[in-house]
Length: 325
Image (cartoon, rainbow, N blue to C red; front, side, top):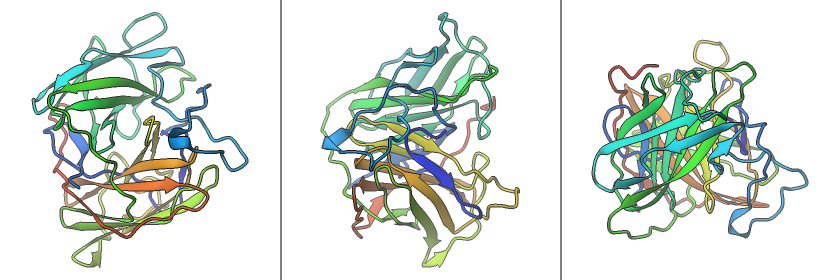
């Protein structure tokens, strides 16, 4: 699920998904509430450069995903574009083909037919969900958004059609209630989640590949027995501040293939599509629970991360019974 941010897992290393979690119930994977991908080669439009970002260091990066509601003959039909904050309700949507028909056949990728990401516009709240698909092609999952405001919904999937490419379609979601805008968390290289410490070494550079390495520890000791989660030891989602361009990747290696180990280091190579600020969400599983660590990273000619730790509350997640596809 690569899109715009090209991330390649190294051998004997793992790519991952970033975020700090807030539990919203069953059927949910990583969720973030901070108190303080197959490729998208068919994308034809270059994503905008947010926050006055500049060039791409001499070459054009792949366009990011999630900026369009329709692409490649498929459309994200969000049936519930409005929810009430603090209230648990069903989020429903349909993927439609060029003829307006609901898509009912998908390729399974990382143990799921479709990955759903919900993120607030300020990138403080984050959800990684796996909804249930009905026979008529309608996807649904109960969700409770903690704060009012604007959100973006990303559907990451590959149709079960010969030659079909992975797509990430995006649509806006509004949560009603009293709205108080939040500031984007400051750049950080460490995050605390339910007693775990996750350290990010390295930075992002626009148009230039760089190495990022994450290390998970608890009580001052490295965690070396991470468990497979969705067919990998970790998953990575990155969202660009400003336009919420979506970048989702998984490791090349999978547990049991002889090329990856269960931790504590998670390493990958990353190329930011532009300068600007990115919010990175890393999902990892240990002792039966999924945790998410969130990082704010600035991609510039030289990227510097402050050492201020970010405290994040991570919910415990488990798949909804009968959730399989």
